[in-house]
Length: 162
Image 1 (cartoon, rainbow, N blue to C red):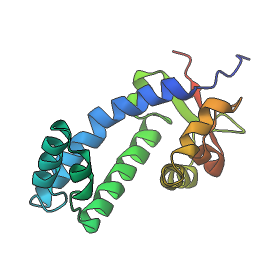
Image 2: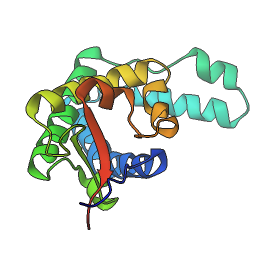
Image 3: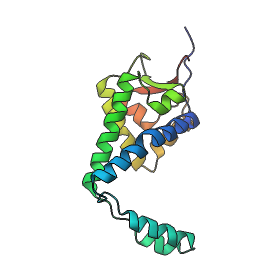
C-alpha cells in the first residue's frame, strides 16, 4: 500500500487561489449583476481605493462599502453548492484541487467523502474563517495537515496518485 501524503498549507492555498479565480470570482460577478448592483457598493469601494492610494488610509477605512446580506448569503450558498457538486463529481476535488493533484477524503478510510462530510466541511470553512483564519492556519502546524474544517468533518486532504 502506498504511503499517504498529506497536502500541506501552501499547496492548499494555491488550490484555493485557483478556485477563487475560476469559481468564486465568476460567481461573484453573476451575483453582482443579478442583484442589479445592490449586493456591493462598488462606487464606495473605488472611492476607498483612491483614498488609500493617496495616502489617506484613515478615510478609506472609515467608509466601508455597504453590502446586502441577502445577496451575501445567496453568494455563499451558491459557492458551497458548487463546491459540493465538484467534490461529488470529481471525488473530493474542486478545479483548484484537481490542478494541484490533491483531493478531500474521509480521514479514517481515505475513501470519497459523503454528503454529511461535504456539508459539515463547507460550514466548517465559515468557522475557520471567523476565528481569524486560525482554522486554516492549523494545516501548517499539524502532522496530518488537517484544518478545523477537516477535523469537524472528519476529512483530510491528500495528494492524488497522478
